[in-house]
Each structure stands twice: as structure tokens, then as C-alpha cells.
Image (tube, rainbow, N blue to C red; front, side, top):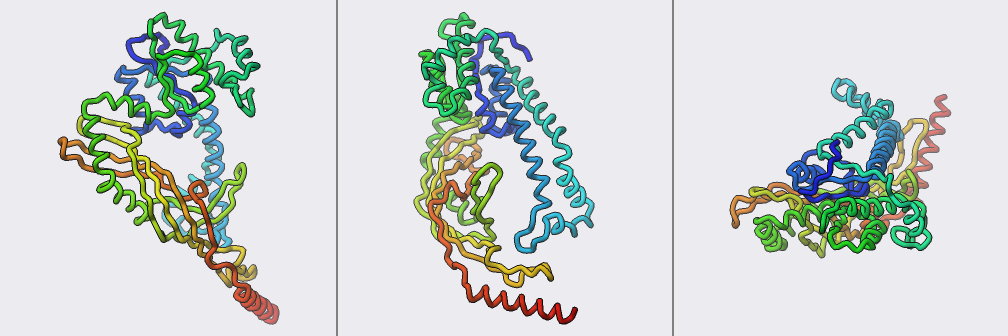
Length: 412
């Protein structure tokens, strides 16, 4: 990577949490890819502290390692309603070579973990090369000054439960201060993108009006696109159509069940409790609210915008009740399968990404709508079981099972 400094373009320093927030997605169309286009067009320069580079690489390794382990375990998990393994449930498909190959790849996913990690690191390094990223070292960072901030509880060390974990942020802030001094450029401008509150607070203490901060890539790209001539046309179109056009689109996400829903909860590291939903029906939908969040891509003939959305929705979900069902170990099947109905109220906050074709000022077409709508423990505000266990029904099934055992013994 070329580390020669040039200030013909505005330097942008990105924190590791921005890469993590975007799942290190560098593919075409992603926010990180859109940002790369600005770098390639010489409009901005990418600056990264070497701490960020190391943190992102560590995160890539940890994520791939955990994901590979999880994928490999899937085939060994039990199917709720049959007690058979997922691998056994898919056995019939091995007759077709394409499925046999796919199942074998899943089974071997964990074995190729080291290769996957290497590939992930290479993809990140290629992004750094493509953007000609300037990596800042920390050799000249004043340690005594950082220690002084630490003992005086100055940002990023203020109100921190684990103050020692904030040293990387403190080092990066001091490196930014050095970068400004080293520039020898009057009114040196710098963009910082980070969602870390302590890090941002520490930068504010530099009292430099030429440092512009953003909490995410979307807000940065929105501000960049705001300078374009056709931004006002897109903004007016979105605001004019929020109620009559976009609200029905949002409603259709619920009506057509274009969302993920589950009753699971993460109660600890790798510990999940709750229910998988078999069926979900919408009982009631109200209070749909929509607002323009950002314009993340804007060209003369197309635009990509994100909408902030929220709603209040009540669902009726069906779950398999393993505890209330009876399993026959001899025949290896359930003699009584019990299903419960659960009523849940959710207040989801989600984003919709809309792609538009800009033909003329009064002729704008919607070509795609993508949503991250999910109904889970984060959006749930209440839950009620509609048909609790019927003890008479369970007792009757138990008697049937005991009769079966007696018949088996007599035949034996």
C-alpha cells in the first residue's frame, strides 16, 4: 500500500466498529463498496490506525471460527418432531449428486476453517490495497499523556466499567492529534466515522472544528449525496410518497410475511432458549410510521435510499410443544404431538432499502425493496400462551403408550 501523504482529497478515518457493523461486506453494492468507489474516484482517502487493522482481522477470524463450528453442528442437531438428526432427515437427497456434494461440504465446513479464515483476511487486505489505505502506526504516540487522561477519567476513560479496555481508543485519538500536527496544512480537514461514544467524546476534546464525525457509513454517504444536483428531486419524491406509496409497500411486508420471526432468546454465550415458530399469522397491524433515513447512492439515473420504519403488530404463532408431547422410545415416534398457539405483540424498528430509477423529474420508478424486518425477542413487548396444557389429554396419551408397551411384552 502506498503510504505517501497527499491532501488534495479529504482523509477519512474509519473505526473498526464500522467494518464490524457492516459485517465486513465488501461485495458489489454494499456500503463499504460504495465508499470504495469514492476513494477510487479520488474524492476521499482512507486512513486506518494499525490498531483498527488488527482488530478487524481478529474479528474476521473469530466470526469465521464460530460460524464454521455452528454450521458443522447443524447436521447433528435433532429435528424437533422426530428425534432424528438433520443429517438423517436429508439422507434421501444423497441420491442426487448435487445434494450429496452440498451435504458433504457442510459436513467438512469445520475442517476447512483455517482456509476460510485465510481467505477472509485476504479479502480484507485486498480491500485495503484497492483503496490504497494509509495505515497509521503509533510509534510517536505520547504514552504519558494517555496515562494522564486515564487517571483523570477523561474520555474515552470516563464512566467506563472496564477502563483498561479503552486504551486502544485513547491511542487512536492521540494519533489523530499527531496526524493533524504532522499535516502542516492550515485548516486540515478530517472525517472520522465511528459509533463508539467514548472515542467520539475524546475527539471532541481536541476542539478542532475541522474534524467532521459520523456514526455510520449511511449518514456519511447521505451527506455526500446531499451535495448532488438531483438530491432534492429524490428527497421530495420520497417525502411526497411516504403515505400513499411506501406505506402500502411496508404493509405488504407483513401481509406477505416477508419477515423473519422466532420466539428464541439468547440468554448467554452460545445459550439459546425459547421456541421455533412453525406457522405465523398476523392478527393485527397498526401505527405504521415511515421516514427518510439516508440516500446511500445517487447517480443521474438511479438512487438507493433507506427508510426508517416502525409498526405495532400482533402475531399468532404455532409451536411444537416437546414438553407436552409424548415420545415412544420403542417405536421412536411421538404418540401424541402437541402444538401450542402463542400470541405476541411486537413493536419492530427496521429499515427498508428502496432502489429507484430516475427517468425524469416526474417519472421515478421503484425497482426493488429490501427489508431487514425481524420479529424476535428485541421487538417483542408481550407474550401469552393461548392454549395451555390439558392434563386429561396428556394422561390419555400416557395410557395409550403403556398399553403399547404391554402388547410388546406379550408378543415378546
